[in-house]
Length: 508
Ligand code: XMP
Image: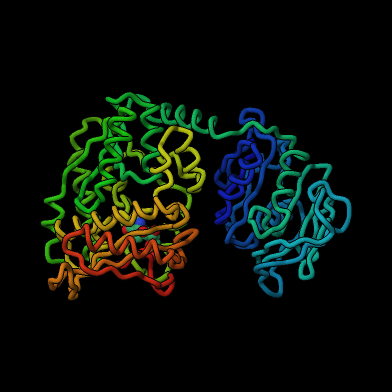
């Protein structure tokens, strides 16, 4: 295994992921962890980057076992500066911060840079730099702005790079990591998703012991995968998943829970019918933030009421994935709050249970691959994201059950047409929005005066930015005709052509 020591870089998990993609097991350890190579079967150690500076007081440093363990060490950015300052070299502030592309020039023979061309593109993000190289190290590459971009001590098997080989903008990053993992650490390819699943199931069993686990299953990819892993690890009398039907889910979501989990996998999911309560609480509320708050709070209350009946619950399972952790770290910052996202975020504090988050080191596409491997259907794994407050943020103005039903029907038409025309899986999200405006129409020679539905279809890679999807006019026409003909209460369909920014993906 390759140990990745985390000094707080936003790329730490990406390093572990890149190593796993090379077929080698990798685990992230907190800064300061003691490393015991023979017991932990560690062949190499990678020290991550960090937002801090090694010259700051109290900066994070590795336990001395890292350099004494006998394993090869690769420091990335801050990790390289840690190596330099612990080996007698000097690190200091450069004249300017270097951020973005650089051209790496290889100076001579190098184990780490084997196979790299004389010049290649690398990605940098640093202020500090190596001012004096420690004894025993040679400099094997530089950039125009940075004399010491790569250092190597082949006697001690210690290496450092100032740039980030783990990001795709570094042209030969994977080659460099592969040189480290296979040629220097001599690690073997033996990691695969099957092993991850077995190890995780065993880990859940060990952690839970004789305890009981509760979870809120939303039916999205992450919570679905967690639910299946938990059900593999624990008997039905020790695992209690709940699905809160707040009336703002789509019919297909509830049907899928029944079909896939309850009937298909025999997982005893309790479906809580909370529709009436939610609609009562939401009656007459039109402010988007108030609606979000009500749905979030009522969701937690509903889950607590039901799960509170499980005597002796010890753990709460959640589908947290790695990008969620980055997002919540960011949301603590001074960035402007656009929307209060609703997830089950408030639950852990209220419940005082131990948390089980088996996916927290994974990225979305890894979770999807695991989902397929554990037998979840493609339609679930490849479904578009659906927000926690559900149709509540897709009905503009006050929410009621009639509008939810209208939206549900319109959404089913859109979903079906996009799938039949081979467009659904190429889009990030596609959904209908209920507009509380009435317009005049004519149907069967009679005047109509009914509501409008907007179609929102976007392409995106991470939901941070998005562009509206260009749908063939013929398909748009069919969707519009079907919605107006089949959904009572709607006599007009419009198409949203706003990118994000300036729009957001959801309308509220
Ligand atoms: P916006 O509308 O902010 O949405 O551009 C970005 C992505 O987040 C989803 N979204 C949510 N997801 N809880 C969620 O789990 C929420 O409260 C929530 N609000 C928006 C949205 O569907 C899009 O994918």
